[in-house]
Length: 408
Ligand code: ATP
Ligand code: MG
Ligand code: MG
Image (tube, rainbow, N blue to C red):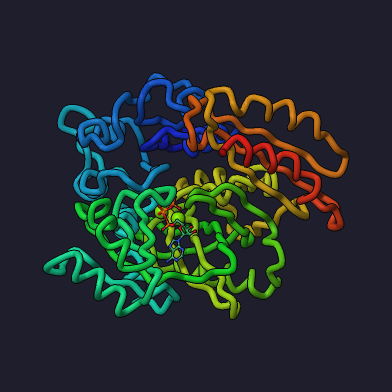
C-alpha cells in the first residue's frame, strides 16, 4: 500500500484530539504543533510532534517540513507563514525546498480571521448577513458609536474584528449610557458594529468542501441543520434535528451554508453559524474554517463519516464522491461540559451518564483531558435515539440539569 500523506496540524486542543481519534483507525498519521501534553498529543504519540506555539513562524516551518499537507484546528494562526509555505515552500533538507499545501486555503483562513471582511465578502456574493459598519477608520470612536446608533438603532453589537471566540470579543450596546464602557473595554481593538439580530433560533450547518489540485471546486456536502443554544455567548447545547423548525427551513439553511462555502477556497470542513428570524428568513452570523462544536454529534450520529473523518478524507482527497451525510439516528442532543467553580465539579457527570442507561437512547461521554477552569470547555456528552417517537429531550433532562448546574 502506498504511504498516506502525513498531516500537520496547527493546534492540539479538543478538536485536534477528536481529529486524531478519527485518524488512528484509518492509519492516517498526524503531526501536531502545540504544547507538550496538549489534549491531542495525549491520544496520539508521535516522535515528529513539534512543541511550541502555533503562532510561532519557526515552529510552523518546522512542522511543515515534517508533513505533506497542513491543516488547522483553530483559525487564529499566522497566515503569512502559511502563505509562504504553500506558495514559496519550506526547506525540508539540505538544498531541498518543498511547497506544502494548506487546507483550507491560507486565503480563506485570512479572510475569515477578520469577521468584518468575512461578512463583506458574503454580502458581495449575495448571501444574507446583518448590516454592519467598520469602526476603526472613524476620527473618534464616540462619533462612530453615534453613527452606528443612527444606522442600526439600539441595541447593536460591537464586535472585535479579529481573535474572538466564545463571544469574548462582543459587546452589546443598549443605549448611550453604554458608550463610555464600550470605549474602555473595546477601544483598543479594530472593531465593527453590527445590527442586532432579533433571532428566534440559532442554526448551524457543517459543510465539507472538496477541490482538485488546481483549486477548482469539486463537491460540496452538507450535514443536516442543527439548532445551537448559546448561553453567555458560549455554545452549550446542540439539537439534531432543530426543535420546532419546519423541514423546509432546515433545507433552506443547508442551501445557504452550501452557498457560503462555495465562495471560499480549499478543502475541508467548515461550520456555518446562522440566525433564524421570525419570518423564517436566515442570516449568516459567521463561518469557522474547521471542524466545529456544532458537529460533534456526528461522531455517533453519522459514524461512517463524522466531521472529523470528513476533514481527514477531504484534505487527503479520498472522500467518496457520492457521499450522503445521512444520520443513522433519529435524534441527537450534544451538551457541552463547561468547567464549574471547583476543579472536580464535573466528576459526577460520568456516574450520572452511566445511571441514565436506557434502551431508548445511548449516551456518549467525551472528556478532553483538560484541567477544569470555570467556563472552560472540558468535555461534551452526546445522547442519541433511534426510534422516531423517542422523546430524547425528556430522557436527557437530568443531564441538562447537571451541566447547567455545574456551569453556575
Ligand atoms: P465563536 O465561539 O462562535 O467563534 P464569536 O466570539 O466569534 O463566537 P459570535 O459568533 O459573533 O462570537 O457571537 C456569539 C453569540 O452572540 C452568537 O452565537 C449569538 O448568540 C450572539 N450574537 C452575535 N451577533 C449578534 C447580533 N448581531 N445580534 C444578536 N445576537 C448576536
Ligand atoms: Mg467566531
Ligand atoms: Mg460564533
